[in-house]
Each structure stands twice: as C-alpha cells, then as structure tokens.
Length: 255
Image (tube, rainbow, N blue to C red; front, side, top):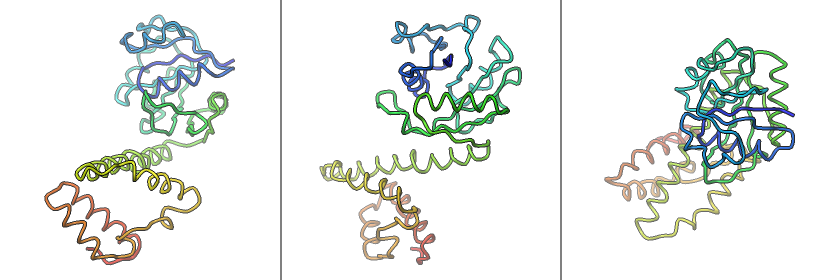
C-alpha cells in the first residue's frame, strides 16, 4: 500500500485525488490546502487540513500547486528525508528543497475540474534523483493505470512547451472557429467530426504527412478569399502567420 498526502486543490490535485481514492493499493492519508473551503467537499472521504504543522506521515507528498508556489511550499514543509514531488511540467527537479528526496510526477494531460478523465489516458512523466524513488513513483503511476516515462528536466520542459502548442494554442483555435461559425449562426457541432478525425489521423501518420488544406496545396485564391473575410479581425494575423508557417514547412511560396 502506497500512502500519499496531496498539497494543493487545483485541477491536477483534484483529479489525482479522485484517481488515488479509487485505486486499490493507494491510500490518501491527508489533503492539504491553505483554504479549506476548496476541499471541504471531500472531508467525508479524506482528512483535510490547512495546517502544514499537522501533516500526517506518508510515503509520498505531492505538491500540486501553481508553479510559482512550488519552491516556497517545499521549503515550508516541516519534515526531512521524505519523498516530495511536484506535478509541474516546467519547474525543475532541484527547485524542490534539498532537505527531502526530490521528484517530479507530471501528468501530461489537460485537466478541468468538471471534466471526467481516465488516467489510463494520462501519461506520467517521472524524474527523480535516485533509482528507488523512481521505482516508487512508477508504481504509483501503475496503480492508477497510467503509463509512465522516465524523463529529465530538459525533456520535460520540451514536452511542456510542445503541450502548449498542441493543447492550449489548439484550443484557442477552436474558440476562434466557434466565433466564426457563431457570426453566421452556424452550428459549431458540424466541425466536431473534423476535429476528432484530425486528432485520430496523427495516431498513424506524422503531423507533417497529415497536413492538408489551402496553405499546403498553395491555393492562393482560397487563401485570399479567407483573408478578405477576416479583414478588420484580429484573427487575420493568426491566419497569415499559420499559413506562412505551413507553406514554409511544405516548401510553398509564402503569401
């Protein structure tokens, strides 16, 4: 049985708690947050506290707070020689206080509190300073049915940057598409099969090979028509930038 204490109450912390709570060989000894109101809903499922001095013993302490708060919180922990990990994609392993064993348990997925997600679809990127701690975190990942990957800080940082492009920026493009369809009272739902097929296609093809569209085929007439439709819109610059990027990638002449 692996015992954990969760520190923080954001999206990642909440989804980890739910996954750990369901796991057969994980017990959540405690959930800490500076504001109890954020985790009060779970008080009948787990011991909750807003006091660092009251933290219970555990095999792993998981810091799942904002990136800017990780270092300070690790420094404030009132114990030594325990395994303390954070869940960030961009914070370094050695930003954690050296008084404890240090590790990273980074679930590379997008989390929203109201969206259900199965951890079998969440790869866990693990980084530790020693082999035994890696084994412990790998077992923790396996216990929630996640596939784990050993990564170093440079690789994790690259993954986090790439994730911003494929998730955060892509979602912003969805929002722009939603705005464009709404402007003519068109159902955005009509685009959802295309969104799913685009994501499914790269399971078997590289993004380079999967690229289609007017920029890839250098369809200047369609591109000009789109740009005219976007005249006066802040989305025009995004269209031009991405079109030029695709054309450069595929050896086409830029606009």
